[in-house]
Length: 163
Image (cartoon, rainbow, N blue to C red; front, side, top):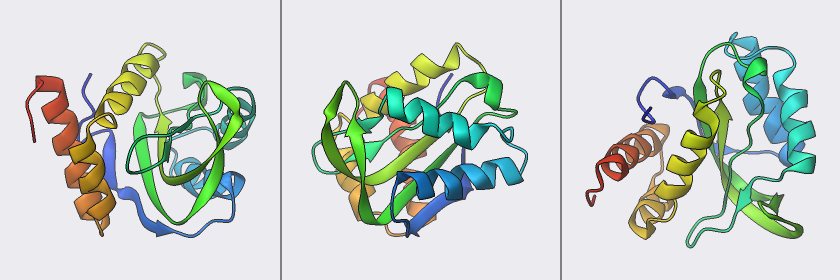
């Protein structure tokens, strides 16, 4: 499965989200998914619980991201919601709980197929290993621009081409 226009939707992209910490980010971003019926009521708490045990911060070159996600049984419909944060917030680093990262963008995964999780994580991590994509994301000002970078980047990375 590719990260397609069906998974990334413009209405779930936040341009300059102002939150004080990851808990508030989960409440805002995940809460909207719950409100819209994309996820179940259990989704936000499941995100918070999982993040404590399995942190999702990634120290990529250029822009620091987090990819919070949880089990598919908390999700009704697959969706990826993205937030560029007005000010960075702290996440623990994936694979190194002791290291704190100042996250600038959140890619929150709501996936309803358990086999999709690993594949999507790998595709998103692959996207963030490309410095050109990171630069384009950092420069993107609007939700439309963020959307276009993500959709184009994932399509290109799936084909192995350059942007």
